[in-house]
Length: 417
Image (cartoon, rainbow, N blue to C red):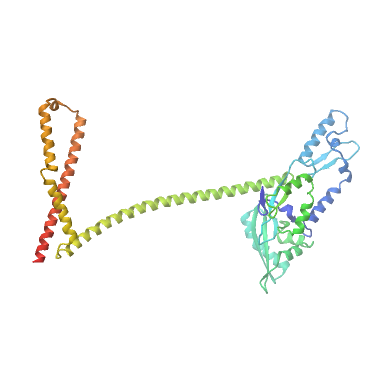
């Protein structure tokens, strides 16, 4: 999985000790590994896992123990009574604690970091001011040093970014120049004094194209060449990511701790997003309730305004003659009333229905004997009462409208006179 240089824990893969670059560090490690014995490279696997020391069952037990040590990548493998033991380390091909990940080289403003130890994070932030003052004693008063805590790493370690500014011109010293200065051997002791014996190493996050090509040209110690070539082929984005080996239990454990930290941060962020969504939902509910209240107030005010407008319109047109629309409305209402009073239409039909109903009751005496239960009778009565109230309301409305029309006609006649 691709990881960022500032969050993946791969700094030691791209880090350099003062006075050394990345490739010089690898050469130094290889020289140190070659110092114990050049004969170790010629020791066959069968000799380690099938030792010949006692020539009995104890050799099988020692062989199994050698396998466990080889898989772990640490210890001494005894395989012969006449030869020294084989020094096992994490870069051996037997080691099972290894994998390859991808590190993202981000385009950060800061390219140089200090890896230091700390006890308390709050105390570390307080000590940054003291560290800046210590830097000035070595760099001089002509420059301003600014330190910033960038990342908290596992095992009580942290990354500190540095920015040096020239006071006279306010020009920032390039990272390449700082890298050249800090590569000088005498700076190791000085940095240890500056950070009060908490300095670990210097981290450079910027690599030139030539350095990257040289790094990718040969597999790291302990990584099979075929696996290295496969890792380069499976690189999701060669322009952004670089394959980085994780060799040894400590490297894998550090990666695991970093992933746990990242998961914890994502969980905190997710919880924050959930809380924000809950707050928004609560605000939406309150907004809806307030909107309904405002809508009711608006309807009430609209009704009151309409009543005032009606009264004002009546007052305004009290001295005016009847308009054509009003006369047409009066004619329509009178036509409706006349149509209702015509004997041959609605009123006549109603009288005819009543007479037919009486005739049916006389012809069939069983109709009068039909009985209803109490619940059905209540429903019928309720329905009839509602119909009666509806008819009475309609009649009242018609009477009021007719009365208003008559008043309007009388007012119009008086105004005309």
